[in-house]
Length: 183
Image 1 (cartoon, rainbow, N blue to C red):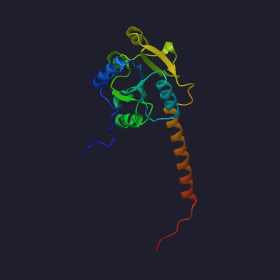
Image 2 (cartoon, rainbow, N blue to C red; image 1 turned 135 degrees about the vertical axis):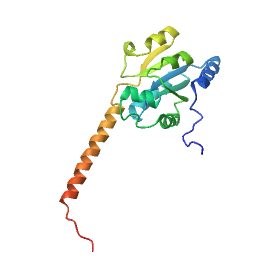
Image 3 (tube, helix red, strand yellow; image 1 turned 90 degrees about the horizontal axis):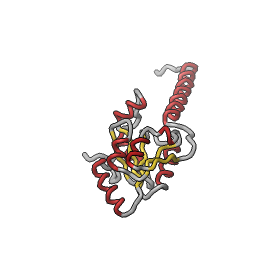
Image 4 (cartoon, rainbow, N blue to C red; image 1 turned 90 degrees about the vertical axis):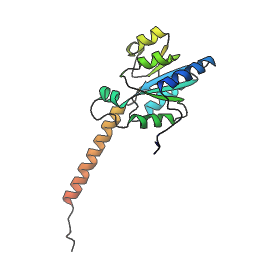
């Protein structure tokens, strides 16, 4: 049975290397964004739209399930990598998506050698983990997306709190409601 989560925009790193080379021959500027993207929220959209404005092609590299678990801990990711990739590939401003296994995106930078590597506003230029790799390869690093409003972790905490409050109300309602015997 074919996967329902396929997209022509989801590519292997090897295939993307070829695509990047062809794009650069045409004079296109390649931008690479990366992250876990476990639950897409408005901050992710702002980040990726700003990244797209920096070049002709936007590639989004997402952490594999294993690396998300290593970075974020037990219970993460909430969505499997293939589903996260499919969601990201559905956005008009994302040209390609790839999944990588490492915690950091250095290997992807080395393989693709984009013109620009973008990070969200939760970073400063001096705190970008891959800044030395980018510098060595001559890749410009940029911080985009405006001020950080919330994170996936805070979204998860908000949902958990609201579900707990709802459960408490429902339990109280069940406890205080009269029950009728069915004959």
